[in-house]
Image (cartoon, rainbow, N blue to C red; front, side, top):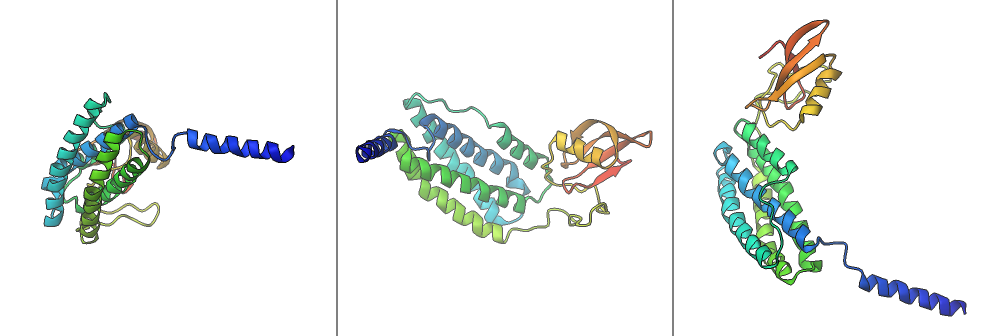
Length: 247
């Protein structure tokens, strides 16, 4: 009796395992959304940095991203339309933030762009491999399979380019000693701090009434704050340096 129950239970578990869809891949709509956003990010970020790069290999790579992903985006949109799936018209908040950082950052941006592209292609390859294997839409699975060699070729190029990308994106290195500011601060550069994080960092440095924070075209958060009862302009750069009394 017990053996019969165990066999029945095992049979049920086995049948459920085959009946449930794979959890390793996105749904068709999820794949289209992520693939489209990733493709748009490649094109937009590459257009922004084209004139902010020093290394010719990276410049050529940026142009290749615009061409290759532009064509891939158009093909994905066509397939999605045939499958009655929605294609996002713009980037999501996190990718838009990355593009905005590139727009506000000062040249050169070789290392920043190379690192960004390495991460983007790792994510894209993971997404496309999973969908090519376990996707739920034949047309999109075929698209994912066809794109993988190109994505992997992009990854190989950017990995080699990143290894020799110029790193002189700021004239003074970040400060390693806590509590001591970089003498050249505030230092221009791609600033990853959100407004909330910038405000919190300034408050932790002993300032109160932090307000009117706005990131300038050099990536520096600027606003006003008070310390010891006195109001003062305050700035926070991408290294975390906080400087008071500067506009």
